[in-house]
Length: 282
Ligand SMILES: [Zn+2]
Image 1 (tube, rainbow, N blue to C red):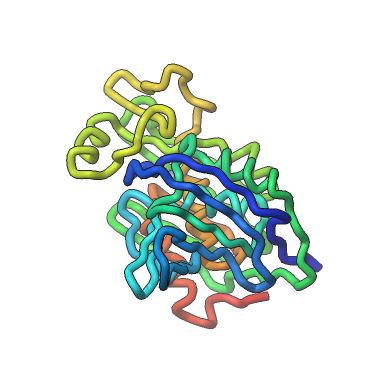
Image 2: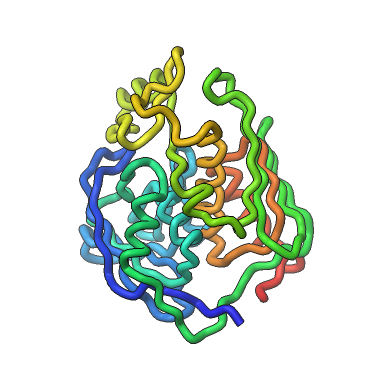
């Protein structure tokens, strides 16, 4: 039997939000069994709780944002959610002093470190998982995502960008490999011209080469280059597992994604939960 896990002691880190540019402190604390991952805005005095659930997702354009029924928002949760998934944390409280999870280096690295330093705490209640029973597919333009029944979790991701530094890349992650070593370090990326435009309209205010891979006509702008040749597709997998963890479960199923992003990651969860015969909680 696999037990649920929380963290052993409270941990803190701070940094700026990628989109808001706001300085935010993040505090992670243990929670009791069956709580799931719960966010709290400590800069707001009431109605400040937002459970990390797929049905609370209100925006997927530049990042994954969740909100509660009072309009309290928390954005860019996906890299932290991926770290919690990767470290097998089932229950935790994440308190933030602002509207966005800090970007850190653009990957899950610092969050994995934070969780490791806080330690893992086994909880004596069985961990439940979501088993996919039928093939489910969501499509949007030339992007698609499929999940098929399987006896284990896996995600096979393919991307195709016009940019010479990216091009076609594909990667399979089975979850049996170590998240930290295979996926967790892969940084988010952005195109210089796009980022300049986003900054003008008040987005990507905190974006810089210290928290993302920058791309221009000549290639990768970061002086240190890439962390690995296929860092881009690995980051897409990082986003994907973070977004899928908004199901509240580890999923047993085989995912295949083509050019998918936050929107399809969320759409497939909504479609899975639409029909009770398509899944089972085991
Ligand atoms: Zn990302």
